[in-house]
Structures are given as structure tokens and as C-alpha cells.
Length: 188
Image (cartoon, rainbow, N blue to C red; front, side, top):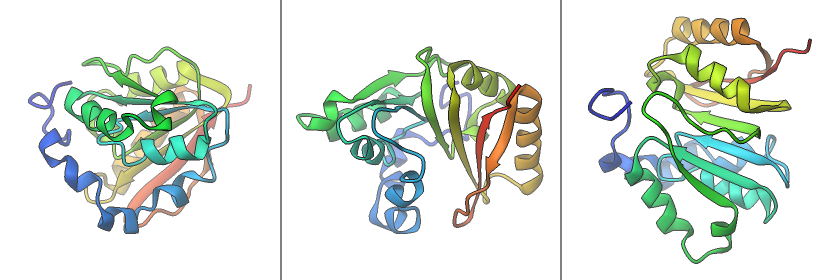
């Protein structure tokens, strides 16, 4: 889905608003991610934008594992590329350009971060099926959606879709002015 087709996708021109000190104060990436990231993991930062969470994930991996920073917009990926250029993070961050109608990543992952992303996706069922297909059996998905874009009813509907597809709710972490959930695969 391109920016012009989906006005809910944050344009590259507004990337600065996604990575600044005010956001860092309100949504501390280390605090949000530390409970979920372990060394050696393969992590998908879906809709990575300018790398606000990508950089922190890479730091928490501490040189082992991999971050797949995936975004629909090449401009966002270029911002991440410039941030990691000529640093040790360049070795563990893989930039991935999503396809118009899917994430397109096929590599198995241990953790997926979908921060302010799911509401931008026109077909959430397909997205959830795709994430299920790449998630390792003990993997987790952290979905965080902004209250100002996603109503409680819309969030509940997304969770119902996830449960029908084969996920279960593992946790509902608190997140300032957001709705958040950690999903795992249902145990058979």
C-alpha cells in the first residue's frame, strides 16, 4: 500500500515527529522493549519508520541476533541506513522494503514489534496470517496502537481476528495513551 493509496501511513516528510526527545520521554524504547528482547533473537520491527525502535532493539541484542527493519517507504529505510552507517549496528540491522500488500518477510522471527502499524494496514486478517507464518513457535508479537487513531472497539475487533487466526493474548502491557497487547501462538 503506497502513501497515496493509504492516507493513514505516516509520510517520510514527518519522520522527525517519529524520532524526537519528547517521544523518547513518553515512549521510552528501552523500557518498552527490554522485557521482550534477548540476545540472539531475530526481531522484526514492522513499519520501522525512521528507526526509533530499531536502534534500541539492535542495542539490546548486543551484537548477537538480527533486526529486520521493515517499512513500506524506501525513504524511511534510508533514514535508518544513515543512522546505522559505519556503526556496529550495521552488522545486525537488515533493511527490508515491504511489498504493497504484504510485509513480505519470509525469515522466521522470535519477536515482532508492530508499533502504530496495524491500523495502517487495510487487510489485518492477511497481515496477521502472514505474521503467524513467520513467527517461531515460542515467538511473541507486541502490538501497540494509538488511542487517537484506534478506538477500543476497533482494537477489540483486531484481537478477535487474531484469536480466530491462531493467536492468544499473553499480556496487556500498560502503554501511555495507547492500547497494547502481546500475542503468542495458541498452544495446540
